[in-house]
Image (cartoon, rainbow, N blue to C red; front, side, top):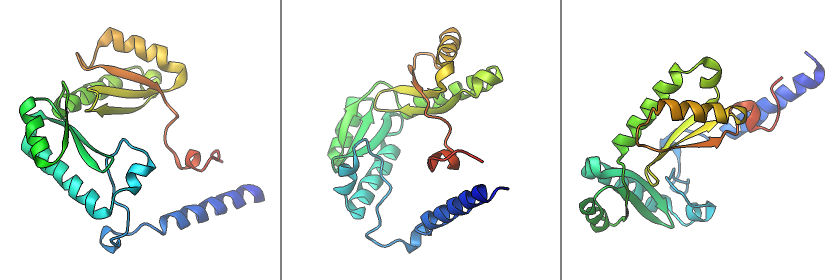
Length: 193
């Protein structure tokens, strides 16, 4: 191994160890630690929340997901408020009464989860070269869509196969160009040795 290559590996290892030193068990976090939040906002949305506010909103989201059952699609925190996508007026009223901002949508979380499972099964049955070009599958309860991230050179082939097979039925599939598979090498801006 060359001296330069060894130095790069040592430097990357040190950077990784330093970055991970801030991680610890959840019980060791202080009250000032940022909470994990579901959000569609930018960093200003995150900064406006205290950990206690975020925790309260996340617990409210969990409670509404349980209480609303099949009428629940997705929850997110935006501008300091819990927003909840639901499929009925009754569920919207219940969400609003609980303190959330409701949005009525067409599909619930179970329908979207089933579409994701169907899409993953369809992907597994594709020819390997095409299957590996699909890097990510996500659902969005706010829009009622499933999004797939596809390698740039394979978008047309994946789109053609989707139109032919229609693995998600009436659930729309949006194709976006993938920025690649997440790897430690690409997260540091370097290439793998």
